[in-house]
Image (tube, rainbow, N blue to C red; front, top):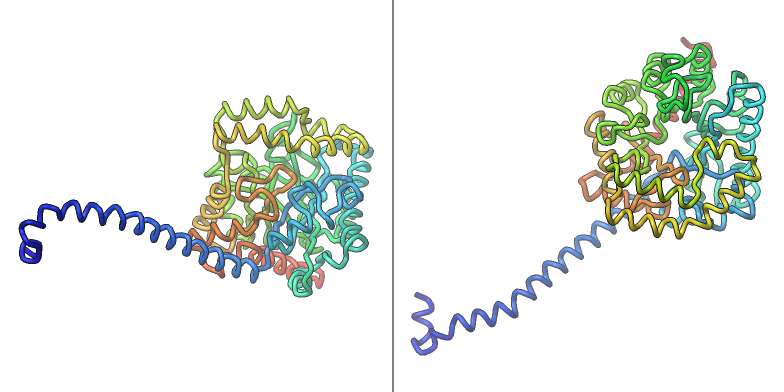
Amino acid sequence: MFLRSFFPASMRAGIPLLWGGLASVLLPWAAWGQQTRQQASEQELLARARAIHQAAITIDTHVDIPFNWATPEVNPCTGTDMRVDLPKMRAGGVDMVFPAVYVGQGPRTPEGYAQAKESALTKFRAVHRAAEEMCPELVEIAYRADDVARIVAKGKMVYGLGIENGYVIGKDLSLLKTYYDLGVRYITLTHSGNNDIADSSTPRGEPAEEWGGLSPFGKEVVREMNRLGIMIDVSHVSDNTVRDVLALSRAPIIASHSGARALADVPRNLNDELLKGIQRNGGVVQVVALAGYLQVDPPERRQALQALREEFGFLSQAQVRALSPEERAAYEARMRELRPRYEARLAELDARWPPASLKTFVDHIDYIKNLVGIDHVGIGSDFDGGGGVPGFNDASEALNVTVELLRRGYTEEEIHKIWGGNFLRVWREVERVAAELQKGGH
């Protein structure tokens, strides 16, 4: 009616063309406006994520280091080709990492134990050398939970010390105090292979269960770790070992770098029963960023990846363990040199079979939070030990995790808990239990 009354009949025939012309002009402007609003929204999201990230104490509880770390060849102070060093931590707003004192499972003999201890001491010396001699103006070692905020407030980054594989204790309980005095605040009870403490989730040519969980010596180790104030780490251990630890430990425990088995059914991950046990214990699960623990790839990708690793001369863990320190250093240097070519070829596989990504990583955080609550989940990347996924591939990309959490509706308080608050709470409680036990508390 409006058109009839407003336009003469002679003009009404041209109205569809008029509207068509206007639409051709207005629709692109509308699309541009929507795109601009989306960009503005993304910029707001990023700005809010930066503010939250900067205000948090951000802790990654597990990164690996080579035996020639903190030397002129691999200098964490000035930068490396590793996924974690101090410049990358600064760029990504990561306040603290735990360089793992990792020693692979070897022979359970006096000679094997002596070599394991010396290998561990090599890495202890490296962490202390970096923090105390090479760049003390940039980083300090934290010995207590409250040290972390104090060091961060000075504008420095923080190293913590954790042992990956209780094999370095051998059968000598007194070494726990030796390692504690060097700064160790968590110990992963096993690695790949059973040891004298407990059964591993991935035994190597051994009975699937040697002890049925903790060994008698392992129970002594748990009690002594409680007494000293060393967090018990159940990443890498068997399900029965986790159950035994939960039944015995007086203090909350951690899984320094693990995932949810419901999302990736591999032995290294924790099933729902164990996740709920850690919740009841008051502990925390630090979600790993290693692709193989975030999703189970199809057989075709696994076969292609194995062929690629063989082509580039990757050694198995057992083969690496058999190398002398000099041979191992040479091997690690060669792998670093080959990494650009290897990653280019890996990208071709990724295009064909999409790998785990930042979103997959945060899916595991979601799952654990929804199952057992926000107070029991954190982050342990396993960078330089296999960790790294598109979007969270090294320490410089840590902000992307905060962005994804914010995008999924996590609050600032929840993000702060995930990035470090939950882990520090557990650490403080472990300290409290140790103080009570040292006073003769029961």
